[in-house]
Image (cartoon, rainbow, N blue to C red; front, side, top):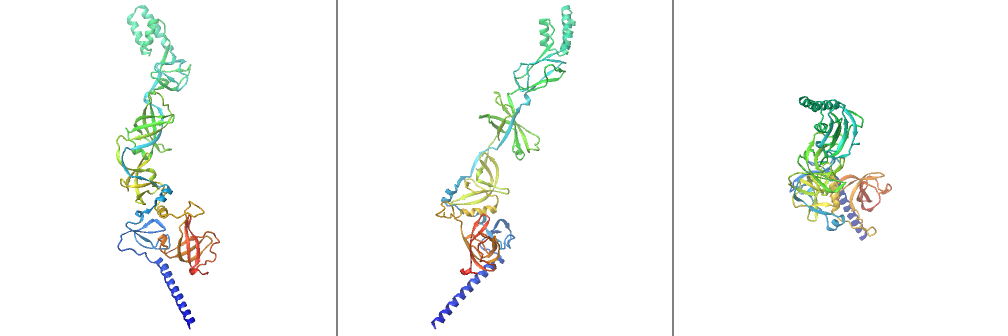
Length: 491
């Protein structure tokens, strides 16, 4: 009698267990078709799919990305939620913090530019008469000359007859006609110095000596010896080097930030230990279609003639007056094409904050909104993240420190998650499972694909089975580590 009674008790216990498990499985799977419940005591900010956190919805419903209901995000959660970083993890990752500070900083632009001759110091050497180049004292362009140094000697045949007439009238004592002849020579552009020399020597002067009016560089030499010249013809151009122009390339996006009168400091590789000071004289109109830059014309003092045309210089433009600005290190800003994010430290945790950035000034970036003075931000050790989805998927990795296995010191073990679900489909690469909630990931019930470690893995698993499975997060998705039929039995 005892044996049949014990058998009945065991049978009833197994039946109760199966009924309880079936109820749990039906409830877990039916939750996928029911809207996620909300807490009436909290204010819902928005709904989102935990698998695609970058997308927000203003009302509940089914996710367009996964076979699951959207999950509410309450005030005080979501992006503002902190992620704990223990001191050990901070040291391992090399996390360094910086304080948001307010500084008196002037607008500054870092540019590059090239030097060229100051066109305002260019002087022309021209012939005022017709003649021939008898001798060139300057043989090539870019030759250095001093003020008053001969450049060319011009033979002027037209000057011979007027000078002989003047000498004859002067010897004859006809003062009135001699004075008229002198005025005629002046009209023929015979210099007074040559007339004085004519009167002193009594010999006709047939050559005109053209000298440089300034000290500088011969920027252009347009004739050769023996060439014929005409009135107004340019023999040479000489440019003074007391000052040079620096043309700084100004990107199109920064044209509005440059102002006439901004202070300039420039350095050249050839004179790395010296800084040249100046001011922006003009913003030249027009943008280069190839480089999309405008040019800022800057005048630099060059009395020692150390700067030469064509030199490449690093230029820094600074506004005359400094303004208070909220600054953080540039490396603390995680910039993407859509937003800029800063990780703000709160105790032993950090939270991502979307900020509006201004101009980069040196190694710091101006913060227009999102931060307050005195806050601590992560300055190094943060991931370069370009979207909210990436931010939410990466930051949770900071929350726990997995211990390193003994055989591979220094390497963190991946977190293993366990769930129960129904096999919907099996392929060579993945198994599609409709699973219940996953507490370790705060997932609700959903249907999704889990990758196989190898195509031959889990050969005994078939569609329609209820299984218990373990998985970890991999580089290409979630990878199965163990899949067994529910209760440990074989299919």
